[in-house]
Image (cartoon, rainbow, N blue to C red):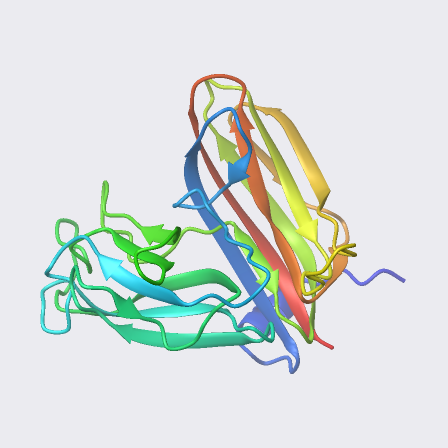
Length: 256
């Protein structure tokens, strides 16, 4: 018999009351063009084949350890063994600060300490926050300040860590109502197979064509299994010009 988790069960999982289970909620927003790109605030979801040295930097000097902006950021991703790691970085304004652990994936980060008690006009950080490859290299992810300091990454992509199996619960997409938007939900199983021939070929999980407005996916049973390490996420494009798109999805993770 197919197991369909009830709302009450998922609340217990989210509360940490069900051993070996957890819920992941991913969301992102981006302005897309006529080429598929990940639905993330930066437009990127980097998927290198080995762990990469990264650094944090702000565009504003007030995002520093004694400043009025962000004083610390917390970064969550996967290390070179595809295990989830969390690290906290003390900010230093416009001077880059190295992350202590190299990452092979980065799927969430946020301001974890601020010099301001934020309100409607004052954010928890002063500038655009960026994580990039060490030495001023390629941008991996950003946290913006317009129209408000967001304080949290927007990344509608995720990589299931090793030792866990995921099932998709929901997918929601909101697109520009004046544009035809196409979106694909992709997977890359066996993401740790990094030598040709690759067993982890990317393929679609779901396809959403000619979206105008919004669309939701509510399967009767969760979609899966997706065995970690496995990349999952949403990419989108419009047929002409540019258009805004927002997407989010939920997973339930079960320890292997």
